[in-house]
Length: 395
Image 1 (tube, one colour):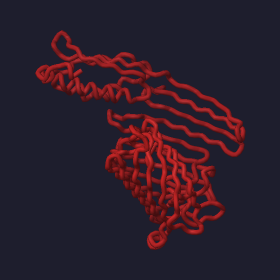
Image 2: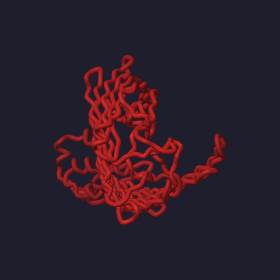
Image 3: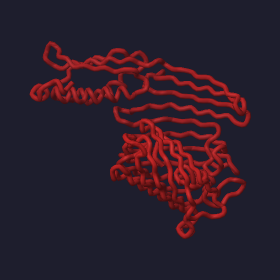
Image 4: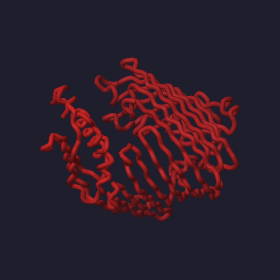
């Protein structure tokens, strides 16, 4: 809109005198008013147009709206009149399915959009099979007060991933989480009961920071990633402070890309911690080792550690003309360690190197196939020379 107007017209003093919103059936008017508050304060036509475009983008990000259109006109007194037309999505949906591949299982999921009028999304998913049942319910609001804060309340009752065991292993978990995230930050408050070898309770607060400039995320050709978090648990069974950080840097050396990555974490035991709280090292990010493959184990379950680190260096090249970010070959080197004290982790590292191929169609998903040769491993480690990785992110 602003591109069709001259600079003189855009700088013309103009105030908003009326805002008309049509198309709201379930959503309360304040949801739209929160996004338009900066438009109302604009003092020139250019400011009105620019802020209105930003407000439309924000409103379209709500899952309750199917379409949002806006226009600017003048009233009889010469003031700006804004018209906003909104089309809401259907109120909800329900999906039901069954599977008999390995075991009879039943799945059902459904969601409701904005039934309370606050642009909230209510979701419930339930699955049932002979060995287990899972239920996850959440209430989510994507923006609060016109700011990009995504807030949700989640209830979980069922099986959660057990990172210390084979991929098919699960741990019984009941949890309540309050999650608030922005494009850069995240805060999670969690009350959970975990049942593995023993039942444990955890009440924790976790703050996370993320800066991601990689392009594209699945097969980066340039950019960097910084990801860090701190989790504090106490008052109930688990009592600890857990720090984690990761950094990636991707440097184009046309036609090659040189990638570096480092990640690590340390857990300070302030009273007690349990198996779900410890660190585990292995696939998919630590190439050449199985899932949780580093370190001693008992009954196929890794012991883990309170200190973990890993480093990755990778050089990649396109394998075909015009396949810069679709089909690439790479050579990699990994180094890392896991233990309960820094001396052991540093003195007993694991290392691999290898070759692989990465397929990233549309740069949205990453399929990686690697062959790894061991430089250093321990007898208790679970190694895998052929490594398959499927993800939406570079690990």
